[in-house]
Image (cartoon, rainbow, N blue to C red; front, side, top):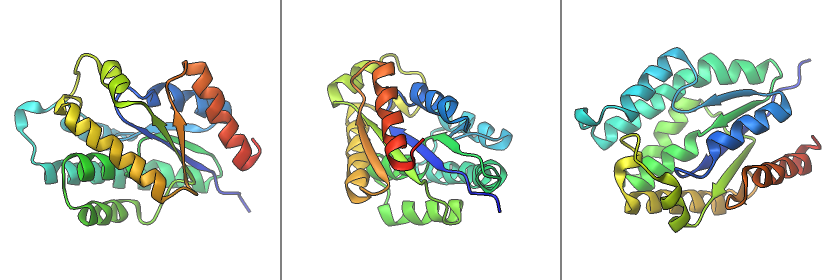
Length: 202
């Protein structure tokens, strides 16, 4: 009987280093690397709409529904089949980002956001979520030049997002581990590998 793969997710605000750390861990584990929104052809098209369509003035609830639509396809087409086949999956963002960004950041009712996420995932949850945390001032510096419509939401928005992430991490301490991301990429990667090794021995 095939052993199910492990599902590990990186969460964090803009500039936290997820796009650096997720590939490093995936390579270390020989895991499938993927991202959200995106990961499949159709979900990547939705990503383009979400991130690079400032002229469309998407309503907050539209943004939420597009996020979970991309996730639904991602889970069915890529994540769940890979896990079921016994391979680990490392994902840059998952439901935690939707709760933090669309719930805490945009101010949509948290219960609505959670229900939408559950509908999209059919109950799939990460085995481990690694939150890369930065002081708000350093995160603002790392964000630098705005490159997409969500990054352009402003410092107050991003501070609310990070408080959302921290609240989720406190509430789900068994599944979430917070890593201070102020070190060099190599230092943070070493911390991440140690966390995975402590939990699973590899």
